[in-house]
Amino acid sequence: MLRRRALRTAVATCAATAVLATPALAGTGGAGAPGVGDSYFPKAGNGGYDVSHYDIRLRYQPENDLLRGTTTNEAETTERLSSFNLDFALEIRSVRVNGAPARVERQDATEVTVTPKRALPEGSLATFVVSYADKPSTVEVNGETPWKRTADGAVAVGQPRIAEWWFPGSDHPSDKASFDISVAVPNGTEVLSNGRMTARTRLGGWTRWNWRMPSPSATYLAFLAIGQYDVHSKKGAFDQPMVTAYADDLGELRGAAEASLERTPEILDFLSELVGPYPFESQGGVVPAEGLGFALENQTRPVYSPNFFRIGSNTSVVTHELAHQWFGNSVALEDWSSIWLNEGFASYAEWLWAEHQGNGTAQQLFDHYYSSYPADSPFWRFTPGDPGKESLFHASVYNRGAMTLHALRERIGDEAMLETVRTWFERKRGGNATVSEFVELTERISGQRLDGFFDEWLFSEGKPRVGVETGVARTASARSADAPEPKAVERLDHTHELLARAHRRG
Image 1 (tube, rainbow, N blue to C red):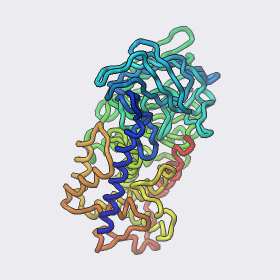
Image 2 (tube, helix red, strand yellow):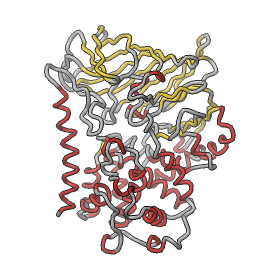
Image 3 (cartoon, rainbow, N blue to C red):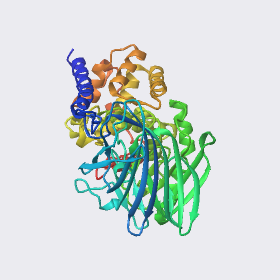
Image 4 (cartoon, one colour):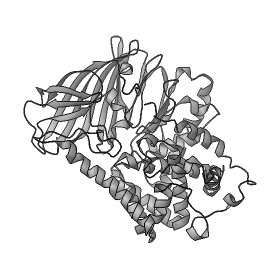
């Protein structure tokens, strides 16, 4: 069957790329690979070791954007290493490996090779201590930097990469680690980061903020927001610590931002009833006044551009970023080509929240968006199952991604869909996943052969068919010209217009 062959070929090609690329990069003589072989970003991450913990200790001066720091990486070697790579863009002062000075050579803008005095045996615990100092906003790659300097500080938020601009490591979602993040700033300046705040101490004219994230996280999900913030700490959902922070200069947008983020516990309750237990130990959100034009699902504490609240409160974007805590953060990508596993689920969660709030059913929203794009629209030329490096955040990944999940629900039924989603999270919690694994699980639970379905919705250009013969419902879409627009559409469109711009300048 052609469609079955197309899906299997696409999945197999992607898997083969990831598997074959690493040996090709690995070299000989115990040199760790300069990347994990991601099909879109071959040099992302590093071979030869797995990081288990980052201890990041920084001092930042907002006045001149000078960042000084020492990061300690605790790692286990997966092969004998005479040298290894780190992903890092800032100026390095020194590197010590297991306490001894090591030689450092910069390979390109974000890649450095470290040669320790003695080779590291396979299966050994290794400690890399990197000292550095630089002005991150001046360090550009291809003319851009994801580190955004603001009037009173900085915002370090980005996807698919941001780590290289403030700590060295293995920057790929397949290498998760726990984090301790400590940042000293001038008194009167706030520092927000992931997890829970463990200490805040003053020494002379400086205040040191300490944050701890014990659950392993992808490196791009670690963040910093530094500046003038109004910080609130209280109990959130599941009696967890909840921290929200609003920039002092939000002005008239402050009320709408608060009306959205302060509903975080309610939304987490809703999502946990659908998917399963919230996977982390803390929660909250941050709204800077500037420096960010998008939102990002930083683990435990998403960051939102104030632009999301220009039309009033917006729980749609909050739902989207909180859904990522399950889909994208806990269940992380094995390869960036599988971005649909993040964005499709988060976008569909917005539809389910809209239905829960009485602002349009998921079926009505499916019908609306399916009908909004004519068959000859360029929208249908982008395939969310493998969108390509340059289209990682194309609108199709979000909207067609959500449509795919609703079409799947119609095809296999509510009971099988719910079981699939909950089983997916339970089995993949804390790990990494691929689209092919999701297809296989769905087929097993539903008892149907669905690769043709997924090929049409995720991997093929053109508008997928709906109707009785496909098993995908077509109700209001048949009379969409006369059907009223669901109430949720205004917020959804506003949210996705901004999300579609996400990270492209980072």
